[in-house]
Amino acid sequence: MELTEEGLAGFFEVALPLLDERQRRLVGAAMVGAFGRGGQARVSVAAGLSRDTLLVGASGFACGAGPAAGGPRPRAGRKPALAAGAPDC
Image (cartoon, rainbow, N blue to C red; front, side, top):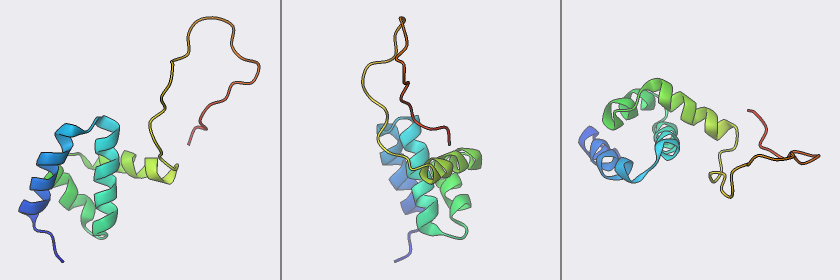
């Protein structure tokens, strides 16, 4: 089934206002992957996202993007002996 440009733009018009910046990048990159060849240009135009933004989203998938880090932010004070953090990808 082929998705028209109007249908794709309609999807992004409804979905993007509900998402934060990180989620927008990941959804855009997922759609690029779904379209394959030529997908980056189609998604960029339909969603109004730059190609660089879509590339950053794709690199997030390559690094194994998961749920956003939650929990308390680090505060002042002595740091733990073994600092656990996400690897830089």
